[in-house]
Picture 1 (cartoon, rainbow, N blue to C red):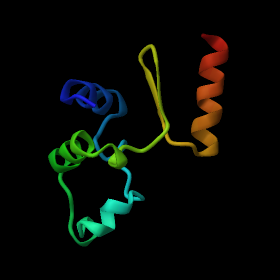
Picture 2: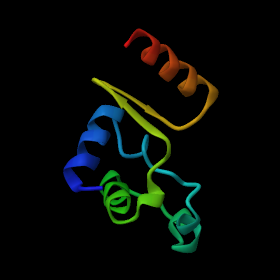
Picture 3: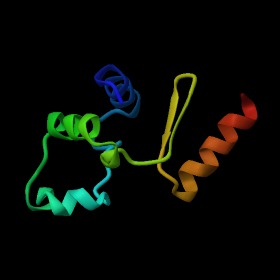
Picture 4: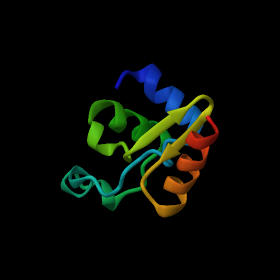
Length: 83
């Protein structure tokens, strides 16, 4: 992903943390679990390594849906039905 694309997703989601996956294998392998990451660091990690982006991400007009929790999936379904 390009930096402008990531920046747009962060803007839509409200924070880099909303998009950042702590479940990525590299999160522990790189020792990132042992320290507090800044928004800027999370942004750069998402740009550098796609595995740090929580998935799936659905962008529909001005709405963003991140992840596959029951709540997010249901909200995305409703938004798609209206669209």
